[in-house]
Amino acid sequence: MEHPKSLMENLLGLLRVRVKRGVNLAVRDVRSSDPYVVLKMGKQKLKTHVIKKNVNPEWNEDITFSVLDPNLSILLTVYDHDTFSKDDKMGDAEFEILPFIEALRMNITGLPSGTVISRIQPSKQNCMANESCITYTGGKVIQDMILRLRNVECGEVEIQLHWIDLPGCKGL
Image (tube, rainbow, N blue to C red; front, side):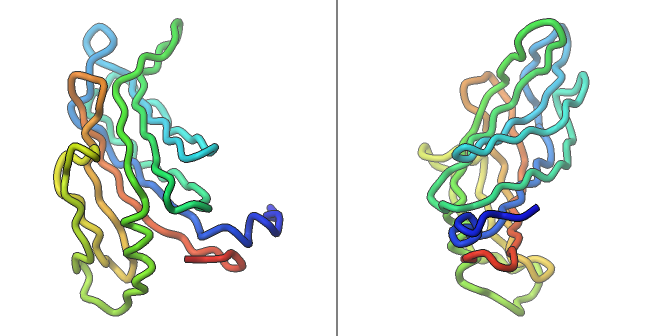
């Protein structure tokens, strides 16, 4: 797949969001829910597969975004899949990617695996359920996050951010 030149000139790289799992998600069907996650950044919108009858689903699915603007945030929405009616929302959360990009731009190499580069504290301005650490692990910078879902009675989603450099793009 050839990328148009203008895209490559503006592309910083690829952000891989690993949607790990949901914890204590809301019940939307009789006794359980069939949850899946939709992630939206700018015009890009991607989703995970549906996990049947599980309010503690393990998706372990990688969603990859092309990053042109590091100031965009990502909106994560959990839905309950319904066969015969409109899928119900089961809460949403928003997270910034800029702190992760800034950590990548520090161009760190050769640290012991597991070294914490920066910590983001939960606040009223973000959806973090607890402190989020950006770490240098196995030669790569990664960020782990537990997001508390809004607009719903309960539920959290665990995600992890990875970065993929693309040859021929603008880069960080």
